[in-house]
Image (cartoon, rainbow, N blue to C red; front, top):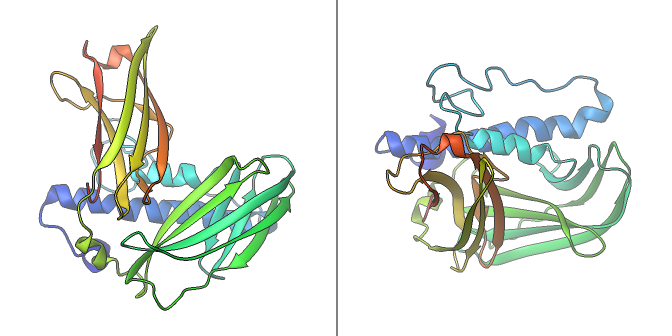
Length: 276
């Protein structure tokens, strides 16, 4: 029902699986971000039931039966950063959470709203200091009337030298939960620079991706396969996956896998995405 109402349904199993990753990423990240907002006043924690399925499944897992990490895994990972910037939907404001990153001073929190065509509609930033085990509310979001039916919230937290410490990305509908306008997004290409090398018993892959198009490139998924067979290789460890790139945005991802899991093939990187 969520895929039908929010994303316009699916014509086949492949499209259903792709759109289900949106739901998994959003809902699992929200579990941890909701807890982060309350953890200082509540001794409870968060536990995911069946985070890894012992049989092939399409729900309730952060990695699947074949050891492929799903979007849910990377949503949980994003929310579990030691120093994390997030949107609080109840107060509609931006906050920074210092889970275990020592006391920090001279930070800058930035929030920007983009239309689905990639145009900037609103931005604001503020300076802050934060102690370890503290949450700091920064400023409220303001939604201008020029926002498209689906719009994006991009957050960034940097230190005094401008180094990015945390970033975050949300998609929201002017009608709550309705993202069907994303189906109108044009197809885009993402420029990628990939290096692959073998070190001992491991393969190391570094991918630098850049969106050189005007529209955002949404829900990019990196996948490692065998060069000759095209067969997906597993398990593979990604520094990040299932992410989106705004116009001009660059993302660097480190990937590693054991040579024993390559079946004697050289690994190659494939890039998939919602509107690639």
